[in-house]
Length: 448
Image (cartoon, rainbow, N blue to C red; front, top):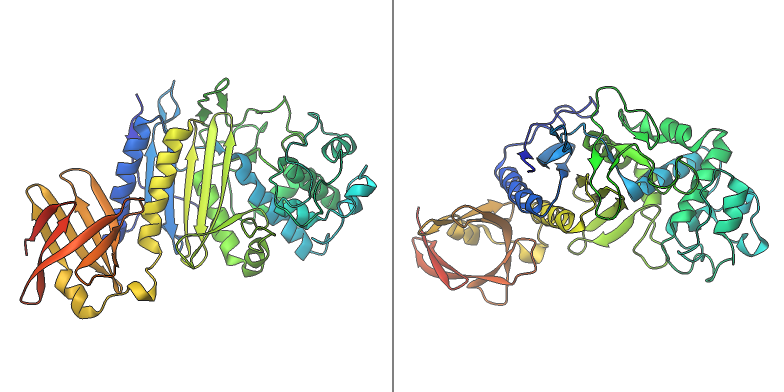
């Protein structure tokens, strides 16, 4: 049976005390919320680690399960997972660095760097591959091979079905062609080029590739699969070698420490971030990252990865300097969705401020702050800047959220990251203090 392991985590010298969870009020609430979310997800077969960071410091983390269920080795911050398609942002960053070094241009035709490119595909640029706007159908794939000419011809067969640069269609093999371009312009293997351009500068000390030997001192997780044999994170998922059937689009193996080091290093490079967040024609995908709003106008940048035995999700919030990493050594999507969505919504509730129209006057905030009780249930309202935060202890489980205005001055809405519409009615005033709250037809009376 899986067991939860919650530990203080330590990382490299990139950020001092990187994995020491902070103890401010809101962050304690977030850690508690993570614990409850991961407990529920663990009952639905989630096994992995989730880490939230803000301003270079971890503010919540939670582990559940084992890196290897047979030997009962617990998952921790150094446990290695295969990250699947979250390899794509790393590939994209390497291309942007090569552009900055003058070794290629994002506007180059792929024919400038690849053999066997048919005439119909010469209008496809490196940027089109990065944005999934090449016009090549997402179903185009080819042989398990290391031969660049062979796979290029197979991947591009039939040519673009849409004018390049006009329509988004997710195409894994476009990133394999990017891997081949990286190898061509650097004169190295894709793996060695990625190590030199991204992994070492970002201090991703344990990161490696499928097929590599296990790094000394790091536990390699075994991925439980719902649709095939279980596999080590270092086993090849497609074929018996790391060829262009998977390079560029997947195959990087990393731990939570590596992924947070990558995100912090990326955020330091404003030029790279600006380039990567250039939206394509649909506005939802940049250069290696999905782009979405997490509460207008706040931006969420993300990518997910799915491969036999492993699931990954990375989200970061440029305006808030915050991020969330979820790594799992199971491909069971139900438990993973519970873990990722629950922890992400909890983090967003904490770090994304309410718009100015939802900020409260000081007198109003002071009238609400305090504790309210109904038998074993306790509600705690506290100030969060010019907003209000509310924690509900249901007599065991807790929910955490913010209070938002409605059209009525006596009714607020409780925002806890769920889709539920929960109203909070304010009742009674004494000495400038609200005396009771009515939530879900239950009345909670002030205790202080």
